[in-house]
Image (cartoon, rainbow, N blue to C red; front, side):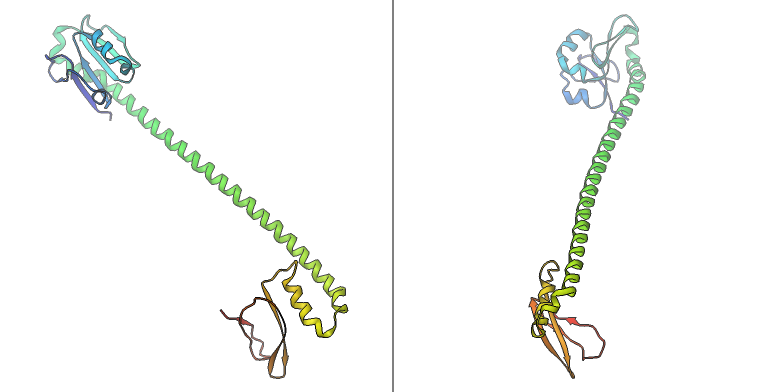
Length: 225
């Protein structure tokens, strides 16, 4: 609930009103406020543009029940001298709906901020999703093109190039094919089983150390390091 203040700008204040001869912006804008002045026109002039920021009621002596709007949310309300002893109760009755209204406005403002933040987060998420989807789509296209090129190169190698290579140069041609375009592997080695041991036939690129199983053992090759 919005904070309520009862301020008199006159030295002689009605019961329940706090005397503040020169109220500050903080005094007037900390919630809803009931002001008392015997010279309301002078007070409105002193408020200047601030009167459109003050929310509440300006009470003053005059024709009982006469009221007018002197600011965006500030009412001038005239009361009789006889009503001064109970003026704070009258002010409370006036401020009650104001207080509830301003509380609803504050909640609405907070909700609007939350919705704006949610919309911003959603847009950020959508942008991120679109960016990642675009990147994945590009990767898929590149991988598809690479696979097609690799298969074409492999078919061409099998169809004719291997037949034109001397037997002695065959291992070098094979590992060169694996590390060249379009496969572009980092490294490749070709080993033949020679009796009970392995014999390196060709190497290309940087493969690193490998641990080979015994020939005919059926185990996979392990790369070290």
